[in-house]
Length: 510
Image (cartoon, rainbow, N blue to C red; front, top):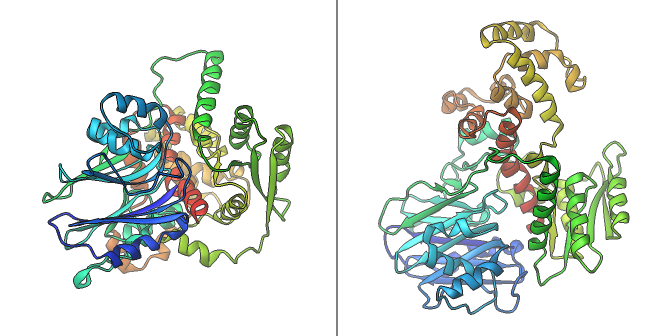
């Protein structure tokens, strides 16, 4: 895991000042404390901060191919690199390291833009092909690793693992990333608690979406990114329960085994839930040594679930460590603001940061169970949504919408009550379609409250934009009529990437 940054002159060969690139690279020192390196050539500069995990001795970056015509900076891991190396060697490529990074440059030479189809892992990388005069960037399928970029007015393209590296750029003649706030990003933040992909809080900067790549040829306009992968919930060949369980067990073991390939101490985050417990159990079965596990406890009994983590740790005889988070632990607020670079409103960022601090004292790499609820439908809100969806399907929209819309308007609010007993909320949900209802379920602030917060000038800038449109756009591409699969797809495209993955990346790389 590392930090990458750089700049690229899309129009010509303007020289890159080393001090400018160094400042961008140093802004991400926390992401790679082991070493930092730069590569500069006319019109191009790459920076890399390294946290050594695989091929510690010779895996330095930026890394080149045999004739120095292709160079890459890379954050993450390619888990199947040991399978790809023999295949690429058989095709005539010469490897000078044993690192997963070198698979990227040779994979690019062999397969071009389709190389990302062959990579299994969590990754964000940018490479430069001097012969093709092409800059190519890509991000992993689930958006585990971040990648930001911005095209400035003078044709300079900036990129980095975090926004702060783009903000650190101060080029010639005042060239810099504009600090203009994107009003649509504000609407998304106050709706969801984060800024959804591909937007950032700044109008000029963007996130490369998960499962996307972007190729830029020098001298040509910068086009749109290409989606190379999307999650598919379609059952092409349904199987029985026993076969499904066996297949799941096999895939979980294979996935965990690949993620345990490292030359540094390894561990896991353990919450006591099904997801992280399954990961720890699998690790214990694959490891000859006790697994290192870390958990968070809370001084408030209402939120403390550390006993369940302790039960799992005891069952698998792990080296278990616990950090207690106090209810008044606000010392981190300023630190978190510096880490996230843009508005972010998930309070679990505090315990996540604390457990990462604890883990860093004992291990370099930690596995987690994030994404399990989205993949297997584990959230409680899914059950309530499906109950309402069955009721919605029982009445045609021409009857359901006006009837329940009226009931929702006249019924008193009961925000103090559990969700299932809030009749007003249920009536309002029944008047909406499935996507609208789920969006309102996960929204932090409803439309009327946001309207009260926003000034007339901001509302004019929004021009009717609603964060609901993010969900509607994804729903149109979901390719499924199954109500559960649809909301899982929406969470994978929004909440998992914008909230969960962002939180874990910033906390673990701090």
